[in-house]
Amino acid sequence: MLIKEKIIKNFSKYAHLYDLYSDMQKFSAKKLIEYLNCIPPKDILEIGCGTANYTKLLHKKFPFSFIDAIDLSAQMIEKAKEKLTYKNVNFYICDGENIKETKKYDLITSNMCFQWFYNLEKSLLLYRSLLKKKGYILFSTVGPLTFYELNCVISDLFGENKIFLASNFKDKIMLEKLMKKIFKNVLIEEVIYKKSYTSIIKLFKHITYTGSKGVDLVKYILTPRKLLKLQNLYKERFDKIVVTYQLIFCRGHR
Image 1 (cartoon, one colour):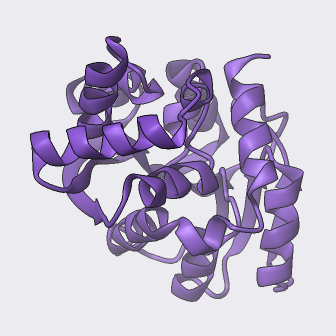
Image 2: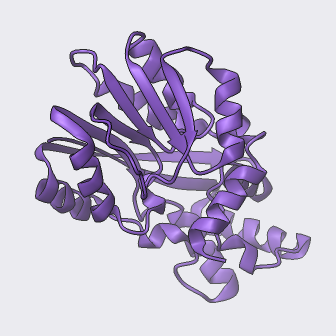
Image 3: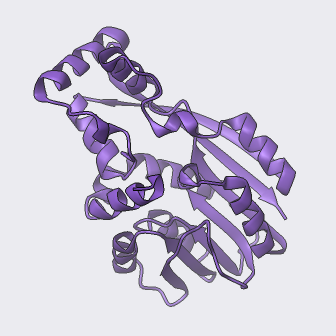
């Protein structure tokens, strides 16, 4: 099974629990909204809308804008439709990397989605072609320092490196170079957020139920004995169960 197919499967499987554990996604969405101090866009395209937490904020910010929100997961779209029923907000099952669309938008935006893309440069070129003349793009994504501490302790336990997909995510420098290649007036900002958990189990639940488990944790049979050892290693090395989230916010104009 391809990486993206596994991600879709995991997002769909836990769509009913997503809102209970997506505090980091909600934090990122609120930060994104702060960048939208502009004339209300008439047409908005949101990539990877999930259960519509960011969509809801977009609609609150721009109540008269038309929003097309897309996601690969049918289950996520179902939850999104239950949450928002406005006539000017439409949800579609669609792959953000393969949009077959001729409509033009004033704003294309996305919250914590682009880290999963196979070819971000190709997608950004596509989005540029979908923007109106004075349109712009705004998105948040996840950097490679994310889950740094968990990578370390799992490596200590299993003797392997680069356990998580985050090790392959683009960093701030790479994103800035890519954005400046395609867009004008580029702004890139990074936020490092630390979140603590009371146990390793609660951390794994958070990772699993927000769909970000991806393909990696399933390789390991984490028995109760191994989980306890992992938790002890965590506390020995970092004093507590803490995780880094590296959030990168990007904006650019057509």
